[in-house]
Length: 293
Image (cartoon, rainbow, N blue to C red; front, side):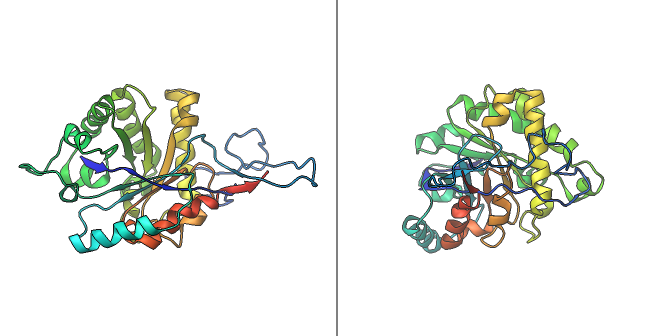
């Protein structure tokens, strides 16, 4: 069970953007359907003399969320510097920011044999766990049902869950992206008592740590599909409130364009989260979501 520790403070922003590209799974912006809830918002200015304010253009209602997954990286020296960099960075204040250090750096004594319990995480103040990450699925061998049970138990103990989903390259090439993600979502839905403290992280396995990032259009279409699945299989309220974040080679250079997508509510960041200034840039990409209103 990967863990995520306490939040760091920071803000958010976004521009409404809908890519015209066709990815092969779904056309994102039908030109003739203005009733589509995921088509771009068209803003009407009734009084040009009034000062403009900035609002977030997001399909969901939750606050922008950025998680840093340190995985099994770091030394005492590098972690000390990273924490110092993060604490001194200027971050937007309306972003939920969390970091997930390796177990060895959470200052918990005792004889651990490769695992850690949610009770131990709670005992040292951890508020979130990362579950269903591709490395746990495809290297350790955890299946959908086992991951769902872990999520249900973590939530029952008052710990939030970053619930990862995502397809392998061969599954995408076979046109199974939605099927795979839906199966993974159903395993969570069958096991969790509530969706109040869940963040869904879409991480295409072919983009994790490879330097290959999903295009904004590719990421957006899956996020739309995930929100639609929640609406149809859980409730419209859960679909609106649940934050759906993107992970997979996110960095300071591509985060702004990804953040502009209406259904991308934040990021789960791997390698770039080990670089304080770059991680701060990703947190501050929330400003890309702000539009005048």
